[in-house]
Image 1 (cartoon, rainbow, N blue to C red):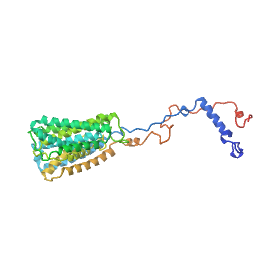
Image 2: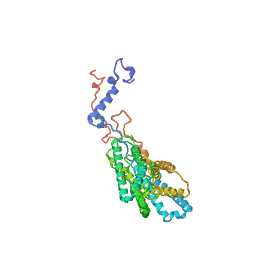
Image 3: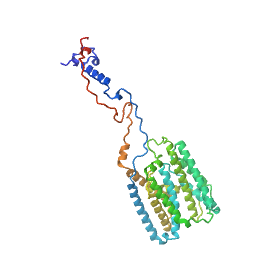
Image 4: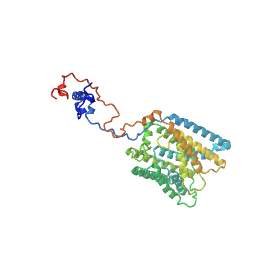
Length: 413
């Protein structure tokens, strides 16, 4: 029977001190440590790996998904154009075409402002009331000239966007909440008018119809193309909610948030001036929130994600073109559909587009990589997600003289 069998031990003997096999293992371990053959990280404490922070990017966009969706939008716009032509072929000829292009340019500016704020992760819900406020500004001051009516509206809109952006950055509150509060303030200004306001002045935007719509088309395509570039997309999308949305994102979000809110407000003010100059009817008091729904809905329908950052290239242009054709078509057919109903329908369709973009718009490997977290599962301070760089295979202990005299069964016992 082996010496280390538990049945041969006397009562009260310590198994850790009197076990020859345990003693030999301890001696070999001490020799190995003295020779420096084990990993030095066993003797020195290892600093805990901090938990991984929120990822700035979860993969490159699959532009093929956006382009495929944009083909669908182009087909829909083509069908609406055919229906309008069949209803009245003069609608696509001048001078009616000039009015159609001006309306498209105004709606396009609203959609551009909404899309820019969405990409930056701070959806601007005040764009609709800003459109209506700019309409009142032009209607009351249009007789003083286009510059005196337009420039103050643009300056006030830019300053308002700057203030709201500073509020979001200082308090780190959701963009939709801060811009909704701003929208209530602009609505209060709009509803100071009790009666409709007749448009003053003689400025006719139809004289520059192709220039206005062409400018919108260039901005839409250029903005979409720049947004498809990885560094630019990540720069504007730093406020996209990743991880804990209440955690501050640092100074890197200051510039994109301010730029998005300032330019979206300026675009909305410009759209209001164009809409007021393109109508012969008085400007009626209201909330303007229908234009907020239309702008955000068109941006979503064009492929811009409701979560921010992702977006297409031609989607906004095609979506705006389709809605402009539909509005003219329903007017000629005397359907009298409410703008709120149209905004709600477009918004729901935009939410469907967002789900498509977010589900199929990124590489499959990006989602799997996001599941790995290098932080310890909990309570561990010496765990490392990678192999030590100084790992050495333990060497066999060197031959040495018999050490039985030192053991528990030695002659000196």
